[in-house]
Amino acid sequence: MEDYLLRARAEIDLGAIRCNYNIAKASGKKVMCVIKGDAHGHGAVKCGRFLESLGADAFAVACLEEALQLRDGGITKPILILGYTPPTPDAVAVIARAGLMQTLLDEEYAQCLDKSARSAGVRVECHIKLDTGMSRLGVYAQGAKAAKEAGVCARRMFDLEGLKVSGIYTHFSAADMPDRAWYVRCQIDNFLTALDALGLDTLPERPLIHMSNSAAIMGCPEARFDMVRAGVMLYGLYPDNLPHPDGPLMPALCLKAPVVQIKELSEGAYVSYGMTYRIPQRTRVAIVAAGYADSYPRALSNTGAWALIGGMRCRQIGRVCMDLTLFDVGSAKVEVGDDVILYGAGGMSLEEAAQLSDTINCAITSTLTNRVKRIYRGGNSYIQDD
Image (cartoon, rainbow, N blue to C red; front, side, top):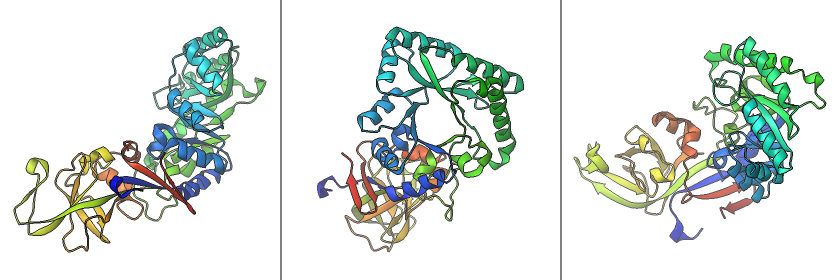
């Protein structure tokens, strides 16, 4: 990378993604890789291509635009749109032409999609989503009575001429919370009840059945069915948002930035906006070229967050700015131009950063802006963002 472009950058270890993918693959089921939100900030096309080369069976994204980006990027495996797409003839034609799969949110939506498909002269492949306890998108299926009705409703969707229903799924709301195991069981029971009412044996072709997200892949083997959906775990992010220093996942992303100035500050000097931090004794401060516009959360300000600088843990001080962050480097051996590991492999974990800033790990990586250069490493490869 040219020196004059050097500032905050995200280094992404494809070898770590391979390791994490293999953990999902060890379930023995088909693996759908969830790479919505630009692969949680890791770069959907680059990560998607790599995962496809590993044998990923399918991909999932949030919206039509994300799906088309993957197709334009050369990804050929099935892609499921998890969210809403307007059921218009134009949109339906685009879905069909790109060979995408659309989630059916309820029967009314399915009927509108069917009507548009027939109007456009195409047939759209779909997966039905059941709401077994998330209370979000999907056919309401909470409780035995509603689950049976949802199964009967789903059966009617299979008969719509403009649609080809090739899958049915649901989503856990608390599979990452061991103290909510009872609710996980309720969702599984609701799903099984709906499937029983659907009558899988009466269908001309069995649909793919999937329920497990990353948390369930790692801790709920009874919910794996035909396929699992690996999301945050692919990037080495733990679904429970807790640090697991000895856990099986490998962090894929490391945020680095250079030191651009070092100064000595006297006791009593105020640091950054708002005078929120005052130097207790004379020290050296490093100004680092990364801020909240580079996915280093402003909420980390004065929380005890740290970065690895000159081989030492150095505490963040003052308010995090849009483009710069300050660290007390004390006696650390550091010079202008030295790299700082802000979080990720070798530095503060994303789980620790998330807890200090009162958020979740993937919410931090998902805010990576385009000005943060992504550099992909893996084995002997060294790939920069286009």
